Every structure is written in structure tokens, then in C-alpha cells.
Amino acid sequence: MAYYFSEPSHTFSEYLLVPGYSSHECVPQNVSLKTPLAKFSRGEEPALTLNIPLVSAIMQSVSDDKMGVALATEGGLSFIYSSQSIESQAAMVSRVKSYKAGFVESDSNIRPDQTLQDVLDLKERTGHSTIAVTDDGTAHGTLLGIVTSRDYRVSRMTTDQPVSEFMTPFASLIYAQEGTTLKEANDIIWENKLNTLPVIDRDQHLLYLVFRKDYASHKENPEEMLDEKKRYMVGAGINTRDYATRVPALVEAGADVLCIDSSEGFTEWQKITIDFIREKYGDTVKVGAGNVVDKEGFLYLAKAGADFVKVGIGGGSICITREQKGIGRGQATALIEVAKARDEYFEATGIYVPICSDGGIVYDYHITLALAMGADFIMLGRYFARFDESPTNKLNINGNYVKEYWGEGSNRARNWQRYDLGGAAKLSFEEGVDSYVPYAGSLRDNVRVTLGKVKSTMCNCGAITIPQLQKNAKITLVSATSIVEGGAHDVIVKENSGMK
Ligand code: IMP
Image 1 (spheres, rainbow, N blue to C red):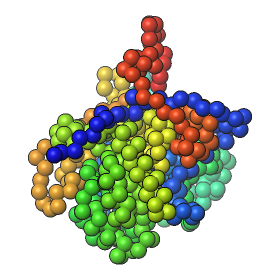
Image 2: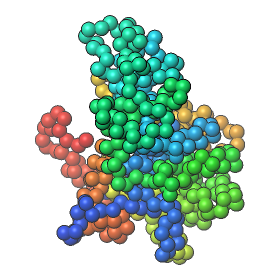
Image 3: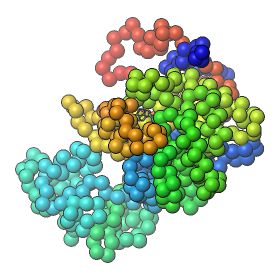
Image 4: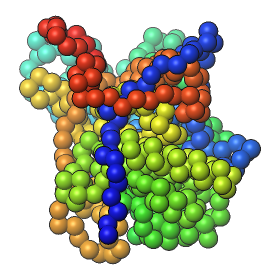
């Protein structure tokens, strides 16, 4: 007879934290959000530690090299998506590893024969007002000039005017040569009161732009995730089909940690993939596995040697797996069961295998709840897709700015099969949708607000570390009526007032 779970499975929104005693030392400034990323033995330090418990989802619309840099700067980590060719994924990993803080590859470029209208369209699309003019309109073409909003006035010009007529031409630009250090670049910026300094090579090809604001911001990132060579750390997704070629390419490119990306991870394919990595690299290459939603799935992957285990099926915002296939489990219930299994496994073996709650975070407090329920870190897709740094364009739809966000199991992404069918089998149905999410601004601003809330709630629960929160938290299920009570009710809420 089939096995029946006696209790319904629950989601984060059905729970709240009940405050506990907090001492005078329990203030947000004293909270540490450090958390293990890879497994470790009792009494030892984790091989890899995150400075904040957030990682970005292994998705085309979320995690490229730009997201990787932005999130590592704040203390988290991106897993660069694997639904692309091995070469382009490895190139993204290398770009994060070779990223020099403050030196930005220009992403708004134009040719001199293009028009003011093209400038306006580009600015709308990228949100950047500094545009490099290059002979071929690429980021590394011959630099011919720069356009900023100071170079044109829409009311006094026609939109078909060519860029060459109003750009600040190369002859009038102050620039720096290849090899200039960030300190030198900033001295030039300050001495000449510049906003942007282009850096070029000997042949006048554009290499980078240095912006005035970046130097200041670089000094304000105490949580940066850096490796022993002071390079940003980055993860990468892999799959259970082409691992024999993809893994070596990603390791060569400098990936700090890998993760098998699969919607259903309780399979022998995952063990075969981990075995390959252990045989070739021993424990030097860290690899997470998943996704699972129960104790059995966790134990299988932990015993197979996974460095962390990812939890969650069907809870993602763009996910229609539950509707299409009828598999999944409420994210909170799955997490609570897997966290218990992780603790029991630690008790029995002395090996702590961190778990990652993947998908379904809607409100910032869901992050705190997931940590309290035992997650060591959280993977988010929708949350990061809304920011400037996600790989998709910002669009204006009826006066509202949005960014595109699509599932890895959607038609848009699935020419790269992520589902483990063990071969060339093609999926005939979608497991994800293509969507828009409201544009929310910069990653830095949003992550800082989110983590401010997490720290504040941790203090309410009497915890200044994540392990303390996991030990001390008091969590209650709430009734449908009390969920209504939790929002603004019985008042007429003014426009623009309330939760952001
Ligand atoms: P979100 O943070 O709620 O948007 O969920 C992101 C997570 O959804 C990812 O990390 C994946 O685990 C999962 N996911 C991504 N694409 C798909 C899909 O097309 N179908 C089902 N789940 C997906």
C-alpha cells in the first residue's frame, strides 16, 4: 500500500516566529550571518563559509557573471547557470574570478553613426547614462567618444541627430592606459573632477570604465566573499549528463563550488556525478546536490558524498511542476523534515552537511523563517531577478518598470534540458513559466534592507548567530484567519503606503 503522510504539508506563509528573551547585547550590529556552505566534521571549520546566507538561483534569468560579482560583493554567492554551452559558462566563471573591483566592462555601447533616439533607447534599456562610443558599437571596439546626459538636450535637438555630432570626442577625453591601478584611476578622476574614466589599450580599444562612485563603494564592503588570492568567489551549476566535460572546464575556470542542478535529485544520476568528481578531484572540488524534500532523499545524497543538499520541489515562483506532474511538497514542511535528518546524521556520523532552502521566498521574513527552520542558506530566483544586476532587460510596461524572469523548465530555457531523463529524451511539456517581476533597483540596497530585517527579527528571537536562531526559535503555525489579521485590515490604506 502507498505511504501516506498524515499531516498536510505547509508553506512559509503559514508560520510566524514567536519572540523570545533578548539581552541588551542582542542588537543587529552584533548579529553575524556567517553560515557553512560545504560539509565539515565535528570540531572542524567548514571548508567554505558564506558571509551572508543568500545564494542566487542557477537560472538564465538570474545568475550570470554580473550577478556573481554583485552578490559576492555583499557576502553571498551566485551559481552561474548551466543551461548554456560549457564554453560560455566557463567564460562567465572566469570573468567573476578575474573581475577587478572598480573596473567595469561597459555594457552601454553605441556606434558614432547611430542616433540620439538610439542613445535614449539604450539608456532606457540598461538604465545607464554613460555610453561608450566605439567604432563597432561593442564594449571593446576602438573608443571614439563618450556620451552622457550632459552631451544632449532632447528639447533642443532632433532625435535623428547622429551620435558623432554631439558626443564628447576621443580627442577631448581624459583616459587611462591598460595597467593603471584602481588607486591611480581614482586619483585621475578626483584631480580632473570626472565621473567616468575610460581605460584603453595601446590600440585605443576600450577595456573598462572606472566610475567615481565605485571606488568609494569598494571600500564599504566588509562582507565580500574573497578567495585566498583576493578574487571574488563564485559557484556554478552542473548537470548529470555532460559532467565529464563541464566539470573540468568549470574547475579550470576557477569555480569555487559546484551544484548539480536538477528539479528532482533523489536519483542515481546524482551519485554517479558525485562519484566522478570524487574520483577525479577527491574532496578538493566541492559539489552540492538536490533537490530533495524528505529525509530519505537527504540521506541518499549525504551518503553519496554531497557537500551540501538543496531542498525544494515545486515551490519556485515560476514553477508549475506541481500542476504539471503532481510532485512536490510544501517548502516549510520539506525543510523542517530535512533539517531534522541533517541533525540526526550529524549526531550519528559527526559530519555536518549544510542544507539550502531553494525557492518560494516571497517576503523577506520567509528568509528568517527558513533559517529558523534549519536552513543553512537560502537560494532565491525571483528575489534577485528584480535587480539591476540580473541578466535581463529592464522594460517599461504601461509606466511600470519590470524585468523578465523565466523558469529553467520553461520553453524559453529548455533547449538546454535540465531534467534527468538519462539521455536524449525530450520533454514535451513545460515545468516553468516566462514572466515579469517588478523592477526593484540595485542588489546592494535591497539586500541590505532585507538583511536588516533578518537581523532585527533574529534579535527578537534572542539570537545573534544563525545556529542560535536554529536552536532558540519558537515557531508557530497560524490559522487562515490570523494570516488576514497579520496584514493591514479594517482600514483604507493610502496609496503608496505599506510593505515594500
Ligand atoms: P523562486 O526564488 O521562488 O523564484 O524560485 C527559484 C527556484 O525555482 C530555483 O532555484 C529552482 O529550484 C526552481 N526553478 C527554476 N526554474 C524552474 C522551472 O522552470 N520549473 C520549476 N522550478 C524551477
